[in-house]
Length: 164
Picture 1 (cartoon, helix red, strand yellow):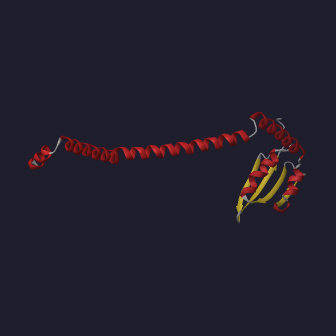
Picture 2 (picture 1 turned 90 degrees about the vertical axis):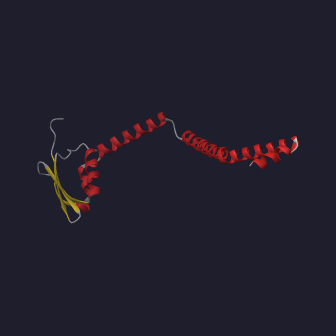
Picture 3 (picture 1 turned 180 degrees about the horizontal axis):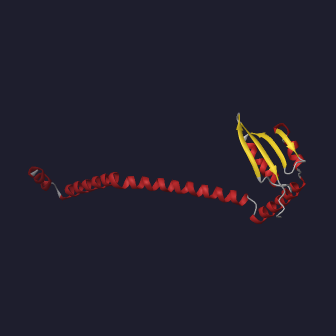
Protein backbone atom coordinates (compact mmCIF):
# COMPACT_ATOMS: atom_id res chain seq x y z
CA UNK A 1 0.00 0.00 0.00
CA UNK A 2 2.86 2.30 0.89
CA UNK A 3 4.52 1.54 -2.44
CA UNK A 4 1.31 2.32 -4.31
CA UNK A 5 1.10 5.70 -2.59
CA UNK A 6 4.69 6.52 -3.51
CA UNK A 7 4.03 5.68 -7.18
CA UNK A 8 0.96 7.89 -7.18
CA UNK A 9 2.94 10.82 -5.70
CA UNK A 10 5.59 10.39 -8.39
CA UNK A 11 3.04 10.95 -11.13
CA UNK A 12 2.72 14.36 -12.67
CA UNK A 13 0.00 16.65 -11.45
CA UNK A 14 -2.00 16.17 -14.64
CA UNK A 15 -1.90 12.36 -14.36
CA UNK A 16 -2.88 12.52 -10.66
CA UNK A 17 -5.83 14.72 -11.50
CA UNK A 18 -6.87 12.40 -14.32
CA UNK A 19 -6.57 9.43 -12.00
CA UNK A 20 -8.70 11.17 -9.30
CA UNK A 21 -11.22 12.16 -11.94
CA UNK A 22 -11.47 8.57 -13.19
CA UNK A 23 -11.83 7.31 -9.63
CA UNK A 24 -14.60 9.82 -8.85
CA UNK A 25 -16.41 8.99 -12.13
CA UNK A 26 -16.20 5.30 -11.27
CA UNK A 27 -17.60 5.94 -7.79
CA UNK A 28 -20.35 8.08 -9.29
CA UNK A 29 -21.27 5.35 -11.79
CA UNK A 30 -21.26 2.73 -9.04
CA UNK A 31 -23.43 4.94 -6.82
CA UNK A 32 -25.83 5.57 -9.71
CA UNK A 33 -26.09 1.88 -10.48
CA UNK A 34 -26.53 0.87 -6.85
CA UNK A 35 -28.79 3.66 -5.53
CA UNK A 36 -30.22 5.95 -8.13
CA UNK A 37 -31.07 3.55 -10.96
CA UNK A 38 -33.62 1.50 -8.92
CA UNK A 39 -35.26 4.74 -7.82
CA UNK A 40 -35.40 5.94 -11.40
CA UNK A 41 -36.93 2.64 -12.52
CA UNK A 42 -39.51 2.87 -9.75
CA UNK A 43 -40.37 6.42 -10.79
CA UNK A 44 -40.76 5.34 -14.42
CA UNK A 45 -43.09 2.54 -13.33
CA UNK A 46 -45.14 5.01 -11.30
CA UNK A 47 -45.33 7.37 -14.29
CA UNK A 48 -46.59 4.50 -16.48
CA UNK A 49 -49.13 3.54 -13.83
CA UNK A 50 -50.27 7.15 -13.54
CA UNK A 51 -50.72 7.32 -17.31
CA UNK A 52 -52.81 4.14 -17.25
CA UNK A 53 -54.94 5.58 -14.47
CA UNK A 54 -55.45 8.77 -16.49
CA UNK A 55 -56.55 6.72 -19.49
CA UNK A 56 -58.97 4.71 -17.34
CA UNK A 57 -60.36 7.90 -15.84
CA UNK A 58 -60.79 9.36 -19.33
CA UNK A 59 -62.67 6.21 -20.43
CA UNK A 60 -64.90 6.39 -17.36
CA UNK A 61 -65.66 10.03 -18.01
CA UNK A 62 -66.59 9.19 -21.60
CA UNK A 63 -68.84 6.35 -20.38
CA UNK A 64 -70.43 8.66 -17.82
CA UNK A 65 -71.04 11.31 -20.47
CA UNK A 66 -72.79 8.71 -22.65
CA UNK A 67 -75.28 7.85 -19.87
CA UNK A 68 -78.58 9.72 -19.62
CA UNK A 69 -79.10 12.37 -16.97
CA UNK A 70 -80.56 11.48 -13.57
CA UNK A 71 -83.79 13.41 -14.12
CA UNK A 72 -84.39 11.51 -17.38
CA UNK A 73 -83.84 8.19 -15.58
CA UNK A 74 -86.15 9.22 -12.74
CA UNK A 75 -88.91 10.13 -15.16
CA UNK A 76 -88.50 6.78 -16.93
CA UNK A 77 -88.61 4.95 -13.58
CA UNK A 78 -91.79 6.73 -12.52
CA UNK A 79 -93.35 5.98 -15.91
CA UNK A 80 -92.44 2.29 -15.62
CA UNK A 81 -93.71 2.14 -12.06
CA UNK A 82 -97.02 3.62 -13.19
CA UNK A 83 -97.25 1.05 -16.00
CA UNK A 84 -96.49 -1.74 -13.51
CA UNK A 85 -99.19 -0.52 -11.14
CA UNK A 86 -101.69 -0.33 -13.99
CA UNK A 87 -100.81 -3.82 -15.23
CA UNK A 88 -100.88 -5.25 -11.71
CA UNK A 89 -104.38 -3.99 -10.98
CA UNK A 90 -105.67 -5.65 -14.14
CA UNK A 91 -104.27 -9.09 -13.28
CA UNK A 92 -106.73 -11.43 -11.67
CA UNK A 93 -106.25 -14.51 -9.57
CA UNK A 94 -107.71 -16.62 -12.37
CA UNK A 95 -104.95 -15.44 -14.72
CA UNK A 96 -102.29 -16.30 -12.15
CA UNK A 97 -103.79 -19.77 -11.68
CA UNK A 98 -104.10 -20.26 -15.45
CA UNK A 99 -100.46 -19.25 -15.95
CA UNK A 100 -99.42 -21.90 -13.43
CA UNK A 101 -101.72 -24.59 -14.81
CA UNK A 102 -99.11 -27.36 -14.89
CA UNK A 103 -98.22 -26.67 -11.26
CA UNK A 104 -101.82 -26.56 -10.02
CA UNK A 105 -102.85 -29.36 -7.66
CA UNK A 106 -106.13 -27.95 -6.29
CA UNK A 107 -108.09 -24.69 -6.57
CA UNK A 108 -111.14 -23.94 -4.45
CA UNK A 109 -112.32 -20.42 -5.38
CA UNK A 110 -115.76 -20.85 -3.79
CA UNK A 111 -114.58 -21.82 -0.32
CA UNK A 112 -114.01 -19.18 2.32
CA UNK A 113 -111.08 -18.55 2.53
CA UNK A 114 -110.13 -19.44 -1.00
CA UNK A 115 -107.60 -22.26 -1.12
CA UNK A 116 -104.88 -22.74 -3.72
CA UNK A 117 -102.53 -25.73 -3.81
CA UNK A 118 -99.50 -25.79 -6.14
CA UNK A 119 -96.41 -27.94 -6.68
CA UNK A 120 -93.53 -25.53 -7.24
CA UNK A 121 -89.78 -25.56 -7.47
CA UNK A 122 -88.23 -23.22 -4.90
CA UNK A 123 -87.27 -20.53 -7.48
CA UNK A 124 -90.94 -20.39 -8.55
CA UNK A 125 -92.24 -19.83 -5.02
CA UNK A 126 -91.14 -16.22 -4.43
CA UNK A 127 -92.37 -14.92 -7.82
CA UNK A 128 -95.81 -16.31 -6.94
CA UNK A 129 -95.97 -13.99 -3.93
CA UNK A 130 -94.82 -11.09 -6.08
CA UNK A 131 -97.61 -11.79 -8.56
CA UNK A 132 -100.21 -12.04 -5.81
CA UNK A 133 -98.97 -8.82 -4.23
CA UNK A 134 -99.32 -6.96 -7.53
CA UNK A 135 -103.08 -7.63 -7.65
CA UNK A 136 -105.96 -6.23 -5.63
CA UNK A 137 -106.59 -9.73 -4.40
CA UNK A 138 -106.07 -10.92 -0.86
CA UNK A 139 -102.46 -11.76 -0.12
CA UNK A 140 -101.98 -15.10 1.64
CA UNK A 141 -102.05 -14.61 5.38
CA UNK A 142 -101.41 -18.31 5.90
CA UNK A 143 -99.52 -20.83 3.81
CA UNK A 144 -98.02 -24.27 4.25
CA UNK A 145 -94.93 -25.67 2.55
CA UNK A 146 -93.95 -29.33 2.35
CA UNK A 147 -90.89 -30.63 0.52
CA UNK A 148 -91.74 -33.60 -1.70
CA UNK A 149 -89.30 -35.16 -4.19
CA UNK A 150 -87.46 -31.96 -5.06
CA UNK A 151 -90.55 -29.73 -5.23
CA UNK A 152 -92.57 -27.71 -2.74
CA UNK A 153 -96.16 -28.69 -2.11
CA UNK A 154 -97.58 -25.24 -1.42
CA UNK A 155 -100.99 -24.54 0.10
CA UNK A 156 -102.19 -20.94 0.24
CA UNK A 157 -105.29 -19.63 2.00
CA UNK A 158 -106.39 -16.33 0.48
CA UNK A 159 -108.29 -14.49 3.17
CA UNK A 160 -109.90 -11.11 2.79
CA UNK A 161 -108.38 -8.44 4.93
CA UNK A 162 -111.29 -6.37 6.24
CA UNK A 163 -109.01 -4.00 8.11
CA UNK A 164 -108.29 -2.03 4.97
